[in-house]
Amino acid sequence: MHDTAKYLIHADITAAGVVERSDVVGAVFGQTEGLLGEELDLRDLQDSKKVGRIDVEIRSEGGQSFGQITVASGLDRVETAILAAALETIEQVGPCRAEIAVSDIEDVRSAKRREVVDRATELLAEFEAHSVQTEDIVETVRQRARVEDISEYEGLPAGPRVEDSDAIVVVEGRADVLQLLKYGVKNAIAVEGTDIPEAVANLTKERTVTAFLDGDRGGDLILKELAQVGEVDHVAVAPRGRSVEELSRREAMTALRDKVPYDVFADADSVEAIHEEAARADGSEVAAAQAQVPSGDATETGSDPADASPGEPAEAAADGQTDDPVTLSDHVDAVIRAESGTVRLLDSDLTVLAEGDAEDVVSLVAEASGTPTTIVLDDTCSQKVLDVAAQRGVDVVVATGDGDYVKQPTSVQVRTIG
Image (cartoon, rainbow, N blue to C red):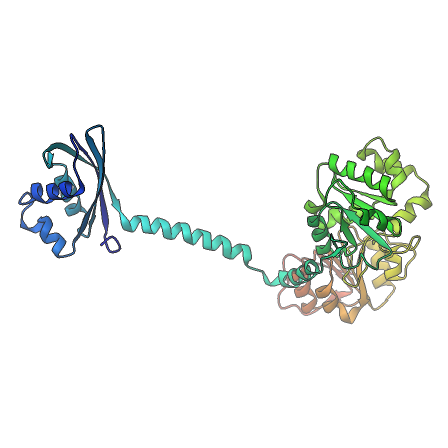
């Protein structure tokens, strides 16, 4: 009956003596018989399945009995309330004086509605948490593929290129390795605690080493021990109080790009003073330190931070340039005004993420590992260019002219250079 009941009558019973369940049930039937007329006779209601069985839980303590009565009702609200009130007229159970008080009439359907609402809310949250927007599919697949590349080196979490790379990035834990893998850094290895493993110490003596540790006391201690048992060439400074696994792509890549020689770090009075010391350091020394980190995000082709040859800027190696443009106008001059027939993808710092033939602009933007914010194109801006730009989150497209647009996304600004 509970499965089909509309209401549940809950009542408390107190008896001045020891009584059992059968005594309570007998009193309910006996003392309500004829009280409510034939239409609400309790036995007839049970026979017609309009009232369920009477559930009684009773216990005795110190010569008294206490318990709860539950009656399932398929009647309407008025009839159920009358039946509940009839229970309170019972004054004796077995040989003992007794008192019954209805504590609650529960609307079973209302409770089920609450359960439906609660469960529906949970299901919606789970659905939204696991749903992938169309524009995120490429990046989601790319990041998962990178995470699956995590391997081990001498039992320690490491990127797949630690074995054969000339340079490595030393981080604290597995989560840091995973985070850097998402950003395309495949030559990171974790020390897994303040006790530097011998395998890492030996590895640092054979490779160019960048320590990229959390910006807290633990990171400072690990760096000191790493310098004592191994060799550290450069230090990438995480923001004070932040861990590597918390950093966004831009924050992580900026920290790696701005790494400084270890001796500059060791001589600095504080983390905040490191960049000031680096600015006063010998130009060639700092340039050599920064040369091993790409100016933009690492690409999937294996261009990892701390993995380029000393003295060879990663951006110059990628783009065949010796001087990086520093303004958007410089990029416009080099691409559009020079009639180069090419396209450049730039990040928010105007760093070149990728470059190629103008006719390949759609595939270049779609497959870019980083997130370009500006496209400089020596060609007209077509509808396909606008669509892929909006999909990848591009803010500005600079082109030689406007194409025939069916729909221009409001999130993308188009600038033309005559």
